[in-house]
Image (cartoon, rainbow, N blue to C red):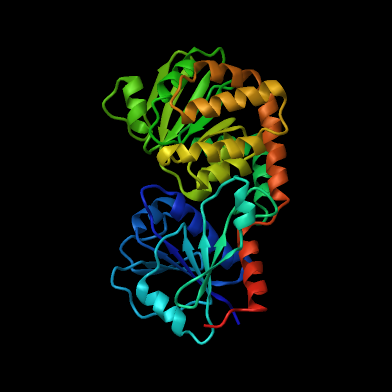
Length: 383
């Protein structure tokens, strides 16, 4: 008998929530033969990541996943065997009540945000007894074997390596997007939140000795880019040059094409959670724009990751990496730190591949969730 899963996703103002849950739902179906319903309150966001989706359909089947619009008036539906509330979203009260009425209580999981902080390992898998008699468990993604791991499809690393080993793959992909670069150009992708530090980084790239081709998918950073270029509007296909820097606006890509973009670039600036993880699987140097939080709580998460990620670097490369990431996430001048990055880029490239291989040796989230459920079945609580 197939295990049924309900995954609830409330899209806030970015694509991280839906990006993670859509990947997870697909993987549970494709690799573990699970029956998955994905409840999403913003189908427009899903359509950006999955072009075959239809924002007007209340129910649709996409790549084996039953995708539902999350309605305000909750319909009576059977409770799944496993219930995941992604990133602390609030389940419908009617659904929770139905969970208590189920003959066999479901496994209720809170899929938490990604963090490299030390306390995560100690909290991963802990139960949280509820007043209604149910138990909810905390499930933490992470970068160590003591956590739930990261989302990674079977064969992803091998697929990426095959892509990167044949230059024709990169050329064909870039040409499909209308991208033509100089042979010696450093190809960089930029996906970020609004950031006052962008102007100084662009100045540094424009003044660099090596040509730089910057690819910017449509998104929140576009307004900052317009100000630096002195233009009122940027749209897909626009191409601007200043000094040794060429800036090109490209469309917002599907998840599969975004992976190929990351694989194609020499350096990737990413944001949030989903693109952050995918950049690590790309095996290329990266710059993370972490989602800002009140009282600068996000900076503690940034430092926790940097401690892990920089451990294998030389003192010079580590200093360059830390300076750039801190400047980018604190809206400081980027010119000096970018020059330092360029001087150690070969070492950062080698480290990025080593880090990817280290992470790939750990369990991925979908397998960890399936195993968690199997272990839970041996002694499920009674309501």
